[in-house]
Image (cartoon, rainbow, N blue to C red; front, side, top):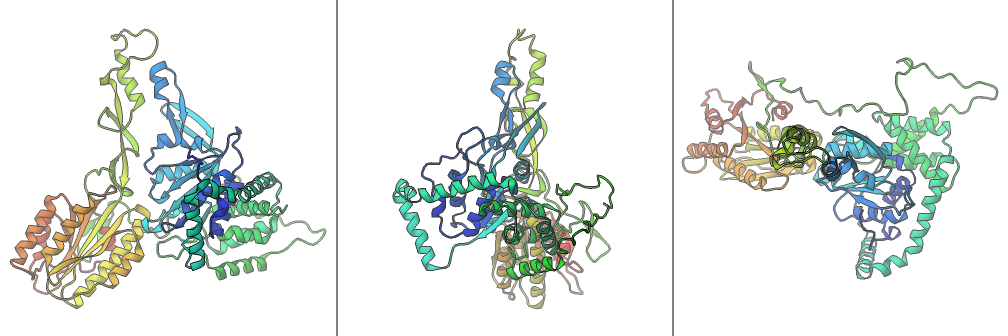
Amino acid sequence: MTDTHERFPFSAVVGHDRLRLALTLCAIAPAVGGVLVRGEKGTAKSTAARALTPLLPPRPDGAPAGLVELPIGATEDRVVGSLDLHRVLGDGEVAFTPGLLADAHGGILYVDEVNLLSDHLVDVLLDAAAMGRVTVERDGISRAYPARFVLVGTMNPEEGELRPQLLDRFGLAVDIAASREVDTRVEVMRRRLAFEADPAGFAARYADADADLARRIAAARDRLPAVTLPDAELRRIAAVCAAFDVDGMRADLVIARAATAHAAWRGAAEVTEDDVRVAAELALPHRKRRDPFDEPGVDDQELDRAFDDARDDDPGPPPDGEPEPEPEPDPDGPGGGDAAEPPAERSDPGDQRPSEGAPLPTGSSSTVAKLTVPGLGTGGAAGRRSKARSDRGSVVRAAPAGTGAGLHLLATLRAAAPSQIARGRTTGPLRLGPEDLRAPVREATEGNLVVFVVDLSGSMAARERLALVGEAAVSLLRDAYQRRDKVAVIGFRGAEATLLVPPTRSVDLAVARLARARTGGRTPLAEGILEARRLLRREELRPDARRPLVVLLTDGRATSGRDPLPRAIAAAAGLHADGRAAVVVDCETSMVRLGLAAKIAAALGAERIPLSGLSPQELARVA
């Protein structure tokens, strides 16, 4: 549990009214599903989440509610729980130790940079937040424990997005930014400096306001079960969600729960249109955004039209004495679906990738299989494209201790069992030796870094190549939105190579940088390859290093510097010696073909693909 000492008062947070309301509604009704807080660094995301904790009612056991912070590097065992090895190995007793989700029961589970958390852990958190309970089935044990908490995740969109399927699992979402009003910024500084100078005295000045908020939250929780949700408001919720074309039924259910919580917060006995409007403003923005090109948020005018249409479609109550219309039969027959539960997740509509190994037409008679980064990575950066060793993935086998992280209990017990008689054991705990210890070997998937190296020399042809690589990079960024890849672009022209787009998952950054690129001049091919080599050496020093794939767009002509072609071939050989995977897109279009790109590809140990007929979408698929 995070210590509550010197916590900034919730009522002292300046501005961010929508964020404070979203947190309050989830405190009243944790079944809403938590809050995702998106915003640039330094916008009080963490401060507001932590400040809510003292306002929550006590836990079911009477202890004060606490805040549990989930580390980004946490393992699934630490999150959900695992066998108590001390008791198993020492006393021979099969005992289970609950994880962090049990500690969060009755309080707040806070995940900073939730977009960097492994996807399977995000799924576990969101399942627990929705169900209020955790069930663990592993290592021959079956345990369940309550875990009803307020889930708060914060993220900086500049560091990458959550997949749409995971975005949808958060009940509410709020985008926040620092105010541009001078008076507001001054007040933020004034309060923060006063808090740092005297935390206890500052908290005392807001103690009454926080105590009043705590009383209101507790009263709203008590009132919540008695709040009614009329059929007219249910129809309004359904109509609005249908107007925004959201997937599944989760948005409808979240709005219903949040609107009921808002009515309880107001002290009302019945949900009204105003409650539904507030809930929709918090529940729809992140569900509407299915693609990194979509603007975040919901336009007020668009929401107004949806509510106006919902009023027009409302049939109103039937006349006195006239029975309610019978519901239409379920086309799937009895048991065809449970409207109270969201349907199974479906793939993102923007995800149009071919199946693994599908042939790729390139405009010639040959076909090119989808390229992947070969080998097994070390799992430096979580992702969804390439296989990698990991200490957080699925267990694929057991191995002698020292080859994996942690202890594989069942494999250890199996290794020790045949030696128990020889070791003189008749009763009591198992007798283990160092040779018995086994570790789990895990595999997961990792993200990759795709580095485009593009020839910008010449004129019209260079602009066409830049347009091609720009569209391909954007296509890959769409895919990176799903798979947690990064894309970089290096351009070479004149006498030098330039890093046009540093490794990023930001579509906006890539588009802006590519728009400013210049073309023309001679062809320093060697410099482009050497710049890629330098970039990859820098990147592999990062803690979240990704295995790279270099995509070189060139006709093989090198016209800048001394011995330009031999230098380019030597540079390519050096990149190959570094063990970098690569592909060469041959941009030669003249009638008389020199075949120079094939020489560069041979030095790189790379496959060569002709540019003719290769669309940006196909280039992105190849990469």
